Amino acid sequence: MRRVMAGIVLLLGLLSMVACGGTHKGSGELLVWVDNTRTAAAKQYAAAHKDLNIRVVTMPPDAGYVPTKVSLANKTGKGWPDVVFLTNPAEVSTLAAAPFDYAAPLEIPASVRDSFTPGALDPCVLGGRLYCLRNDLAPTVLWYDAKLMKDFGYEVPKTWAQYQQIGERVAREHPGYLIGTMNGKYGAGVYFASSGCPTRQAVSLTEVHINAADQACTRMADLLQPLAADKSVSTISPTDPAFAKLGQDGKILMLPGPAWFGDFIFKPAFKLPPGRLAAAPMPAWDGEDKPYSGQVGGGVFVVSKHAGERTKAAVDMITWMTTDVALQAKQPTFPAHQASAEAWGKAKASDGFYAADPVPALKQAAASLRPGFGFVRYEAVWQSSFNETVIAAVTAGKPIAGALPDWQSRLTQAATSAGYTVK
Image (tube, rainbow, N blue to C red; front, side, top):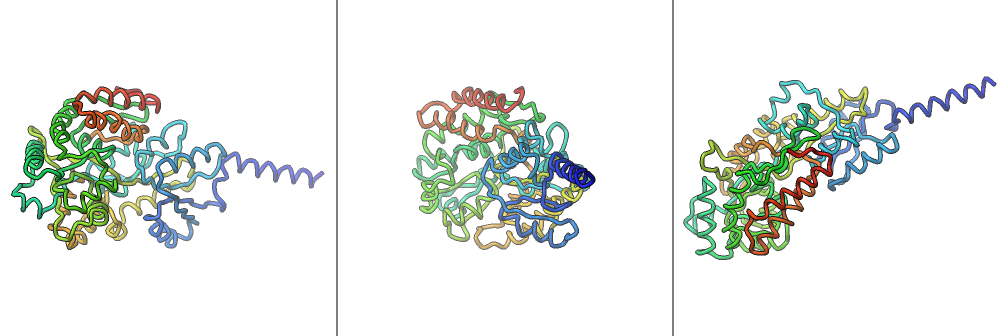
């Protein structure tokens, strides 16, 4: 009987561990999911903190991968990572809300929060609580071919009116050359988001502001209309091989795009010769005090609500991953942490690929992110619906402004389906 009772107690103990979410292999193990780019740094941290028993798992960067795995863990009651890196930062809004209820609000000292570029953490704040730390930023700048600009006799535009004028001149004087492209997130994030068009303004985890009839939307539609009509602004994605061919043929005069375009688009895909690419701030709108940038990309770190006693260790790790200057200075993209961005910029300033140091423009762009660009659960529809409405209108020779109500309708439907109240 004593042996039977002992077995029952042992069985109950095991069942209790499963019910409580026997998440990891070892007691107190800190499970960390990161992409390939962050794996080495995570393992470096693990090696320096052997007492934490950190297990680092490299995961694919595919959109939806992390939410799918978290959903499976929710069903089985185990397997949640304590720390996860999101290559698709909008997914934090999915992981923080029901039914996932995974992302934990972060208690980060004010001194650490203030060390990030102003505005960088704003999308991580949902309903007044901080749910992520940003690793890198992807603010938009005006990339341009310095040689072509000189050969054509054009000045780099400082306002959107000047940008439009150059586009119309290019169509007349140098047909076939481009001053930009608008497609999916590159149209919605580069042009409309930088203008302040409220299509994803997250008020909380359950409320979002969408208004495609806002003047910030219509002014960009009106500006792009003649440029799209005369084809000085393309509708092809900048990551499409057809657009890369235009770049390789030297047909890109200007291209508003995220900070990472220089190293990851112009250099490898467009194969632009060294000494030609330069960066300037995004054009400014008349009546505004400065140029604002949009956003396309970047990554964030999230901590699990299931971390329990490992929460402090998890927060300490993501704080180091995002704010350690020596680490961040070597990463491939623009750091969200200010001191790290300074160190990162020193190496970039001497890169012979650029016609001039691009860092001043990148730093200004990072500090001028247009407010209202939130992390939302309808990110995929936000991108696809832009092409299904705005780009479809351009292709059919119809006014861009006329497509905005349809875009509004699709965004509203997607937001509502994702559990938001639209305001």
